[in-house]
Length: 111
Image 1 (tube, rainbow, N blue to C red):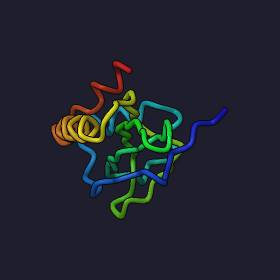
Image 2: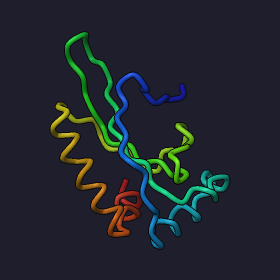
Image 3: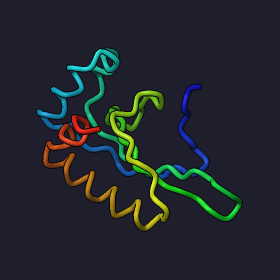
Image 4: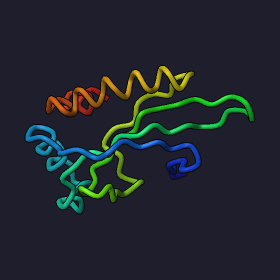
């Protein structure tokens, strides 16, 4: 079964440049061979409905173009789900900080 991205509850940030070490990590993975035009990270929050009143959230990171075009089937990173939107926002800020410091590859290596 293929996991798909939930666009109903998907909140993305403005794409920003992929730094050198992270770009090298992408280039080492065969599944990213066709994303050579991806120069940016797109980070977003994805919500998954558990019940009509209860969601869980995770952070997803995709290689993208400068304009935000990305392949939803090729996430570079997906965090575990957390219980609240606030927890997910905090986690997204931490992951974004790592990516801007060219350290996102350290998360990817440990997943």
